[in-house]
Length: 74
Image 1 (cartoon, rainbow, N blue to C red):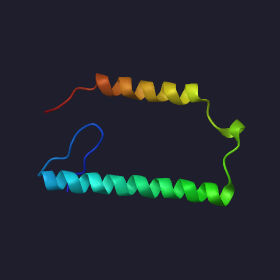
Image 2: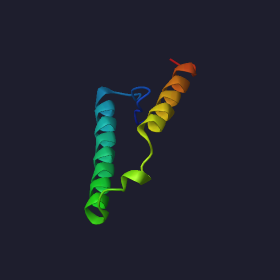
Image 3: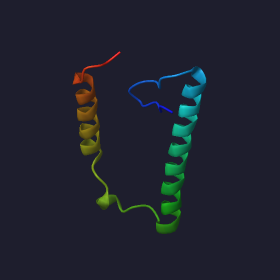
Image 4: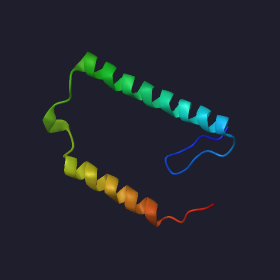
């Protein structure tokens, strides 16, 4: 089965698209649960150990700009 990505919908029927979306949501939910369990076990990370928001923003903006430069296929 083809799974969708943020860059485009999956190929196939609407039911396939719905299954793909449900699978992606389950994965996101599991990742969130892992993070929350880590916080519960270890506490929140020290502020000094976290990246600055400007750096995170710049990396994300660069990735989005790169995505816009890639050719799209129909």
